[in-house]
Length: 388
Image 1 (cartoon, rainbow, N blue to C red):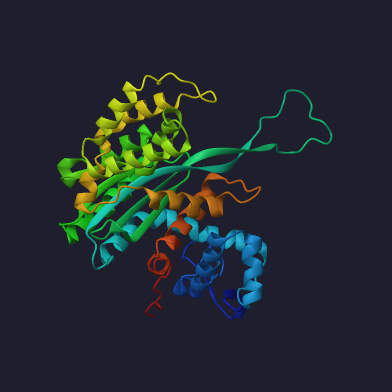
Image 2 (cartoon, helix red, strand yellow; image 1 turned 60 degrees about the vertical axis):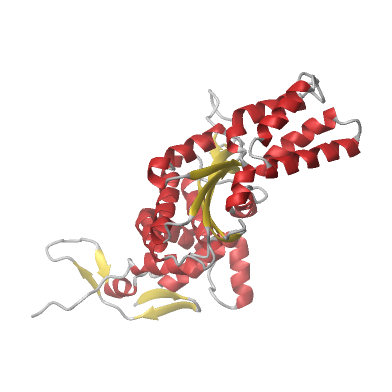
């Protein structure tokens, strides 16, 4: 008898086990598992899919308690820790091909007029082993000393916008620390190429904050020679934040500082050369070296404008109906990483963190069902009786 795990509980089924001809003491083959595409040792695909969905939402303890309240998936916390990672491992093995199929099958929403690609980073708590000190360890010393260290992961979005720059649909992705960000950028570039193949009229905008590494990746992977005219914008609200800090120094009081920021905001949205105009105003203030709480707000604003003025043509973006803010990728950092990966006391290994990050990105992109159908279909194997 073999045990198979369904949505309502384990089921025992009479089965026959086989072994390859000529392989003495070789691995046995369960034909039922091959035919149904079982995940791991007898987990039905739909069961494994549901458990993986629960784990991308919350911890294994929460998944177990939620399943108990719903009256489905009557399995232990240990199972909720193990089975979803089997699904995540399968996804990482095959995700490149499946994601290529998903974007080819993707139906561009009606009213879409542009695409924005945005990159950002968020911190993830990772578990690292602490080397043992020299000498004999104390009697009460832990067998394996670990610490919780934060490292930076990548978050990315490909968003379709309407003619007014409002988001219509967003595809979200994440990548754990120590992964090659070029792999992530390859997926982003492929998405945009596939979308442009369907709709060559879609405009393209690149969005990020002022981090040089973000722009190095975006500009290297979205060259004009391949994608044509690409509009590049520093996130509008990052610029306003820098200017607001400078205005507090330049203004006579809080009211005049707010008025100064509002004037600069209007200028940025209406004039192509606004960044140069504001830069000249800040340089002429004579307060570049004024220290406030250990910082130089005017100097910081001047440096920011000098470095990124060419990416501050917000008036041109608004005229074309393109977005000027990277709110979608900022929200992705919160929902993809912050809400799930940074729970109290949580710490991740590279592999398990990558599983959860990828699975959660599918769910947040409304691609879960389509992705799981394609992924778990690859588990099924046709079996036929050999002719006598």
